Image (cartoon, rainbow, N blue to C red; front, side, top):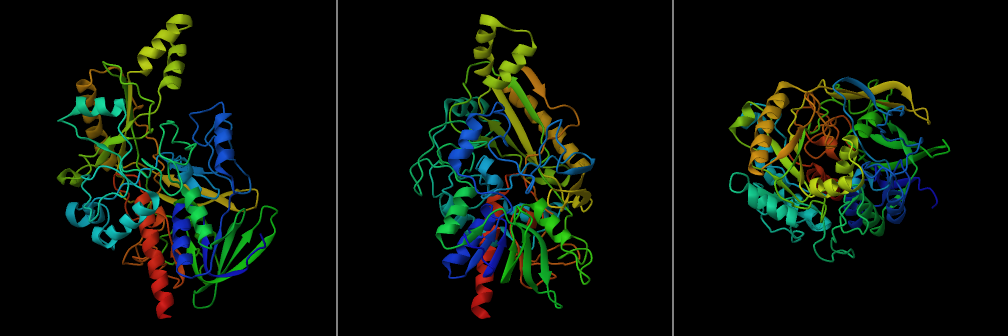
Length: 534
């Protein structure tokens, strides 16, 4: 396609948030250009790459790596793209290609709880958002309708309308876990963007059980579908376009962006309104790179807030063998969870959490475990069947409080285009440590109720990332402690907006994509309102 040099709105990043924002603007009559650093890859090719990969547990296996738009790689021999400043590693995992990281997600589309927007006022911890649950409720529903979301109706998040999609029927595994844990623990269907019937030209889920890293039939919504819908609405998309500088005038109004193609030829695009919709790490990196005489520390960073308050859901897990065969591995990977510890007065003292119950096939991990234990031959086959049919795996999602010292800065390393790579500083505070102790108590109760043996907890002091990367572009009323206003507009630049998880002031206890998409749709309405009144 011929390169476009101007548009009403220029969107940087073609993930689920940028794509659905761009789509909404285009449907309202705006000319929209979306720039994506990574390549365009068809789902069939991704499925084929995964099918032929020897490492089925690697969620990045289907997604091509490019030195021109590198993403994090965590292998012993990798010269990792992310420089870790510690003290705890922040092992972010994201995809730089058309459609973004939701290609390999679990499609969980949870609403925040009303109290998640006001933790400082109610519990004396964290931050209050500049908006309330009521401000975003209609946008939650708009996003659910687009993506075909279904789930449990009584998750604690008030709904004015029912889910647009019925849930995928519960597997035998889910049914037995639910029955065995009741009434002490309430197991609820995950809120997911997964078809239980034909919808939007895509089929119903047939239970392939590799939703992560790629749904082979597109029963599960993802950013690739969002990007395609944006293109159908008239959005022009340029892939392999790595934005490296944002240009402004004397008043701080953004006038253009500059990008490299993969041959390192520089191009310039002008527009009226600009939206940064890359992930929370890459968006912060771009703003920090875009220095000028007027903004020596980067754009939108007059008060030094860009890149700060980097958060995720630090997680610990447990596995054990149940006292009956429940056969995980049939149906969606992530079907259900326990949400009764997401809110309460205890939030004044320790992190709230949600418990995810995995339905992933346990055959590969059990086989590896048994080989290491010395099993072989017929005894190996017999024991694989016994353990894999009983293996239960849980992982929590602990709320981490925003901390300005947890942050993204620029490292001294350069990528293949000569651009600086991200440097991450991250630590785990006592609020999370106390929440971890509370989680372990619940794990013990659950294991006892399910007759567990062979119980294995995460290594003490070790946390895994849930890849719910938030903060770094926090919205707020006060420019001294935030980057954007309540609509995602940069405090320092009247025509620069941010979309994605980076604008979220806090991370809550659930997957963050639905909230980020809802905010992006709300930002699109604000942009359109300003166009009408211009």
